[in-house]
Image 1 (cartoon, rainbow, N blue to C red):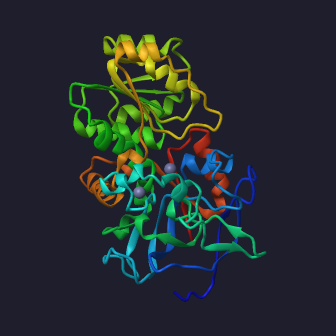
Image 2: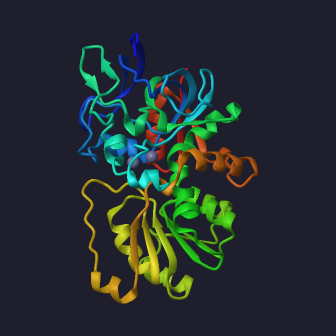
Image 3: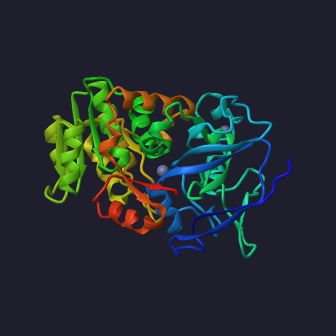
Length: 376
Ligand SMILES: [Zn+2]
Ligand SMILES: [Zn+2]
């Protein structure tokens, strides 16, 4: 497929720990099964920030992260299967998958056997990429199949979801990872019943999405732990039945055992903080399940006690992207928003791309929930 190189721009991580730099990037390759997308909005996720700090050893620098893109299709390769993807269509971008391994075929694309390579290594399966810097250095530009910190990007067809509501592109940018991860963990992976107690650590984007999904199901007890009182207030407003500030309570497992009368049925970590997962195991009841949902920091060490797990029949499981099929679950979340169950307006804050450092600082300080960059 012939492709005339296009100069665009993006937030590039030139090397490990160098942070992001707004600079020109040249797209010089597009395959027949790919889609050229012009970003209008890109959400910033915790995963982008930890990638810059070296959380993913498979990722070669320079690289462009970004995995919550929302934009407009500018070109469609002749082998793209989804015929709704036409030039000019509004689209939301999500994670990539191979579409052919056993888990993909069984309807679990977030468990794709090539997930790490196709998403975190930011390369195609054949190790190639679609972009270079103006000095000729190749760039890892297939992050989650999209590298949506690029204004124009060559995107895997499996990362593209048509959006029938172009007027809501700005809000729906956040659905591609954070909201899908939190809501999918509740609705697709754990599927609690109304009588279950559900414990959520961390009231950021992922945790808040889990709260909204749990309230949508009408769960009896939705308990939220965080260190920022403003976030706990928001959690209550969105459906938390009890909140705990872990800076003010000394023994969290003891407090949770008390609130739940013996331990929560489910507990999920949306913080990625090492100590939280160990603590969660003591917060769930016999036969309880602990979900590892947030991207853990690179030096994570778990102090698992297998005897305690055995005698209490507890489960610890990883849940990636809420075990979602993005092509089905993202439209479902759009409908949850439209029916008033997902008040995204309360959660998203918008910044011009040039103000990306301010956006990152404000989410790190707990001032905002979901920063979304606006491309001009
Ligand atoms: Zn697969
Ligand atoms: Zn993410």
